[in-house]
Image (cartoon, rainbow, N blue to C red):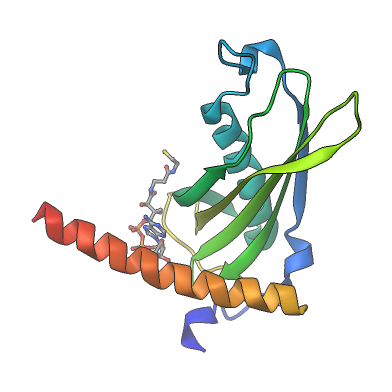
Length: 170
Ligand SMILES: CC(C)(COP(=O)(O)OP(=O)(O)OC[C@H]1O[C@@H](n2cnc3c(N)ncnc32)[C@H](O)[C@@H]1OP(=O)(O)O)[C@@H](O)C(=O)NCCC(=O)NCCS
């Protein structure tokens, strides 16, 4: 498939090669007046853990091109542990879709629950900020293949949406 042919000398990589994880404790400085984690702070962590997966896949500089969608499903409180996991869903020519999932662990009760999910697109760039090809991603498991296919559909929606917005600006 032409869309997946990254640089001809770049070896294909597995989803597992990009998997990344970050754990943060929520401190009072991260919270709003109700003692809940600020949405902007959570977006910052999501961007960071997403970039880690994109770095591991591309092994070059990456920039965040877009964040599709973030659902904040439940509040996170001061003192909770945030666990963020990311992995590549699909590599295109120079861009990569990364999925991020966030859990919160109550340190006293020892329970954890899913609190947010997001899809981000990163673009691999050289030191001048010019986009460069990334390695092909080879999904292995059924779950990885499903995410790979879903990422292709999301890209089509993204591109159609960008076209619509460009049309609206003319
Ligand atoms: C992302 C960026 C490098 C794309 O530059 P560009 O001139 O549009 O580059 P191209 O047209 O060659 O597109 C390169 C890739 O980016 C993708 N892309 C561009 N804009 C995109 C967007 N808004 N969302 C998702 N992907 C996007 C293209 O689909 C293309 O992917 P492909 O090669 O896999 O097909 C450029 O817009 C940029 O530097 N933006 C600022 C990034 C940044 O600073 N982020 C931090 C937040 S401030």
